[in-house]
Image 1 (cartoon, one colour):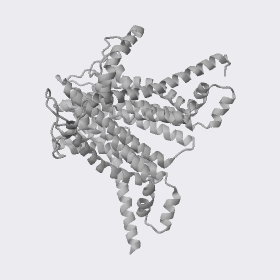
Image 2 (cartoon, rainbow over the protein chains, first blue to last red; image 1 turned 90 degrees about the vertical axis):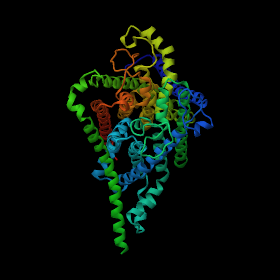
Image 3 (tube, rainbow over the protein chains, first blue to last red; image 1 turned 90 degrees about the horizontal axis):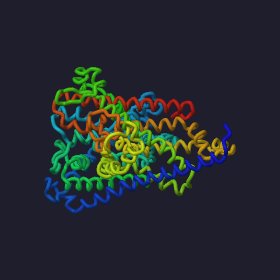
Image 4 (tube, one colour; image 1 turned 60 degrees about the vertical axis):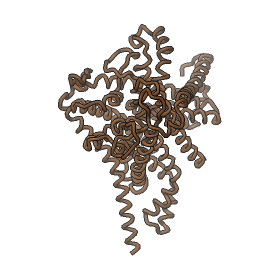
Length: 281
Length: 309
C-alpha cells in the first residue's frame, strides 16, 4: 500500500460512511414516498361501490371496480391451480428423485433461465399459443400466462426447501419400509411445508400484481366476468387503461385500484416473510 | 402383492414428477419455437435489416428494431449505473456500520421495494415522479451540465432519464440483497487481518470485501441487468413512447417492452404483428443470454471455491 496521510484516509472513510447512510435513507424515502402518494390518492377513490359496482362511463360519477376485482381473483386463482402443483412436482423431482442426475442439472438450469424471462414475453408466448389459434382473448389465456410465471419460481423454491431437509429423515422413513413416494410426500415434503408455502405465497402475490402478461391475453372488459373463455376484467390492465385515459374520474379510480393491489401484495409478502422468520429463528 | 404395489406406486410417482420437470424444459423450448414461428414472416421479410433500421412506421409497413433496442439498452445502463453503487453502499451500511437491531428494519423496508407491483411504480412514476423531475431535477441538470448533449432539450419529466431512475429503484432491492450476502460471506478473519494493519472500514470494503466477493458482485449486476431489460409497465408509463433515437436523456424514447405493451393490442396487420413478435424475440434472446452468462459464471465460481451443489 502506498502511504497516504491518515487524515485523508479517515476523511474518505467518514465520507463513504455518510454517503452510505444517505443511500439507505434514500431507499426508505422512496418507499415512503410511493406508499404515501398511492395511499393518499387511492383512498379518495375507495368506497363501498368501488368493491361492488361496475365501472361508470367517462364523465359519469360513481361506479366501481367490482368486476375487475373479481376477475383478478379468478385469473390468479386459476393460475395458482395450474402453476403450483406442476411446480411442486417438478421441484420434488429436482431435489429428490432426480437428485444429482444430469437431467436434474439441466432442468435446474432451465428453471433459472425461465425465471429471468420478462413477463411480457410470457404474454406474447401465450398469445401465440392460445389466443391466435382460438381467435379470441380469454381469462384462461391470462391465467395460463401467469401460471407459466409461477411455475419456475415454485419449482426452484420447492427444490431449495427440500434440499434443506436432512438426509437422516429420508433414510429413517425408508428404513421403516415406506415406499419412496410415501417417504417423499409424507415425510420430506411435510418437513419442508412451511418454506414451500411461503415460496408459493410470495410467487402468487407477485403475479397477482402483474400487468404485462395480461395485456394481450385476458385483455380487459367493463363487464362482470362471465366465462373464463372470454376477455376478463382485471385490476392491473384496468389501471393501465384508466391511467392513460384523459378522464380525471378514471385516473382517480386507477389510483384506488393501485392502492388496493399494492396493499394486497405487500400484505401477502409481509405475512409470508413473518411466517418463515418465526420458524427459522 | 404389497411389494408389487409399492413398485408400481414408486414407478408412477417417479414418472409423474419427472414428467413435470421435463415439462419445465419443454416450456422453454416451446417459447423459443413458438415465438420464432410467429416472427418468421417478419424475419424472412426484413432479414438483418430489422436490427439495423431505426425506422418504425406501421403506415408504410416498415419496421426496424433499432430505436426500441437502443431505448432498452440506454434505460438499463442508467438503471445499473445508479443502482449498483447505491446497493453497494447500502449493503455496506447495513452489514458493517449499524447494529443488527437497526439494520434489520431498514433492510426489510428496502426489500419491500421489490414487492411493490410494477404498475404501481408506473402510476407513481407518471403522476408523481415525472412532474417532480420536470420541475426540480431536470432544470438543475440543465443549468449545471446543460453543455453536454445528454442533458439537452426541454425538461418534460417523462423520458429516458426518468425511466432509468424508476428502473434503478425497482432493481435496487434485488442487487442490495446479493451485495449483503457478499458482505456477510467474507470470513471475518480476512477482514480483521486488514483492520489489524490499520485500514479504515472503507479500505477493508474496497480492498478485501469487494475483491473477495467479486463474483457475487458481478452476479448482482447480472441479476439487475436481467430484471431491468425486460421490465415493462413502469417503463411504458414514463419513457414517453417515441420511436426516435435522441442523444438527450430528457427526450422521450421507447424500449422493446414498452413498444410491445403499447402497440401489440392494436396491431391488426399480420406483418405488424409479426414484427412486434420479432421484437419480443430479440428481448427474449437478450435475457436468455444474460441469464446463461450469469448462471455459467455462478456455477464456475462455485466450483472453484468448492461450493458446488
